[in-house]
Length: 162
Image (cartoon, rainbow, N blue to C red; front, side, top):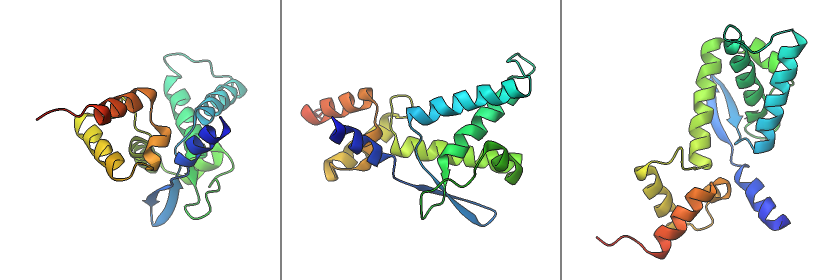
C-alpha cells in the first residue's frame, strides 16, 4: 500500500512554472490534504476578524480561500519549498491581477497533471491516451481520478474500431 501512496505523491512533484513581473515561480499540484488545510485556515482567518459567511462577505471568503490555496501551491521552482510564509504575506506581495493570473496558471497546471472527468474533454482524453501508449509511466496518471483511469483502461483494452 505504501508503494501506491508513494507513486501518487510522486505525481504531485511535477512543478509547473509561471512568471509574474519577471519573477519565475513554481506551481505544485495540491493534494486533498492541502485543500482541507486551506479550508480550515480560511475558516479560522474569517472567524479571527469576525466575518460570518453571508452574501455580503462571500467575496472575502473566496479571496481568502484562493490565497490559502496559492500559499500551498506556490513554490520555489528549483527547490520546491514554499514561497510565502502566510496568505497575508502573499496578498501583500501580489496585485489583484497577479493573484488572478497565478490562479489561472495553477488551474491549467492542475488540469495538465491531475486529469479528471471534470477537466478532460474528448480531445484532451485522446492526448492522454496517446501519451499513456507511448510512455506508460507518465506522471500524469498518478493523480488521475478513478473515472479517468477506468476510461483509459477501457480504451486500452478495447480500442474503438474505425
